Length: 140
Image (cartoon, rainbow, N blue to C red; front, side, top):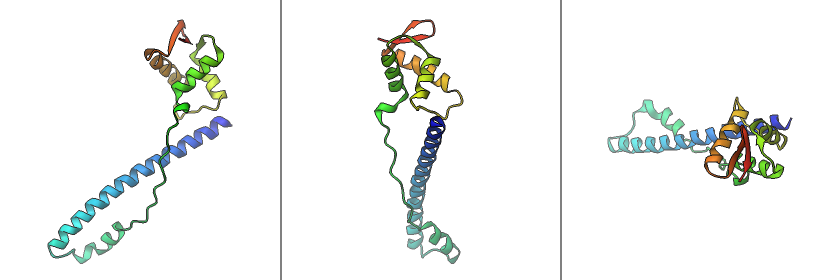
């Protein structure tokens, strides 16, 4: 159930981020519209047929929620290093993934195990972990 709740929370956050991006684009479009309206005023005013469109576009009552701040401690590489340090022995990607799920980690990825595996290789290149044996990773 924790995985489902985490999945729903992350999907909600993704939708909220998309809404924020759309609202930012809307503000840019409104600023452009204001510039065009200023140009129309210089040319003698806007035609009557634009009155309703101008009224609709001029609404400014959009509330923008604050952006989510990513915490450094809940990133996947950090969680993987924590799992490896907790166990103190070389582990396979599948074992690490299972431990992450028990800790409440979730993702929207169709292949979460592959995501963990790919992240293991990335943090191996960064020098935080090393391959201990075929398919097993350990802390340095």
